[in-house]
Image (cartoon, rainbow, N blue to C red; front, top):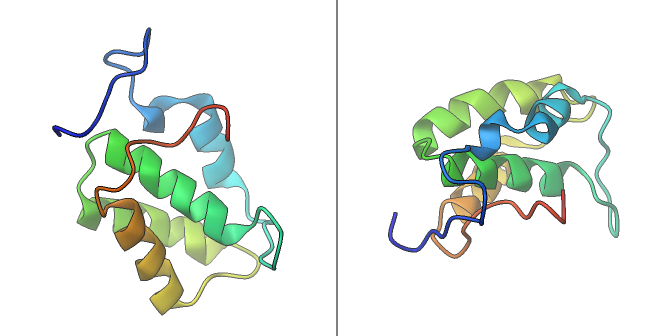
Length: 100
């Protein structure tokens, strides 16, 4: 993808292969709420990791659907699709390692 840049020292490494990705995927006790780093932020971060790893949006939606279903308080279908669409909009490059 032309608007993606490779972080120094990470060439060939996909974010979906990073340990933090699997840790987040296994976490089900994530709450939502104002001013919290909650479900929306985690789902967006996971979607960005998929985007930057070259996973197409449809496959990302399938993978993250099971993540959302396993949450104690899943996001609505509309919110879920809105977040993934935003991550794949082309406005963002990848999940920030510092943020994660």
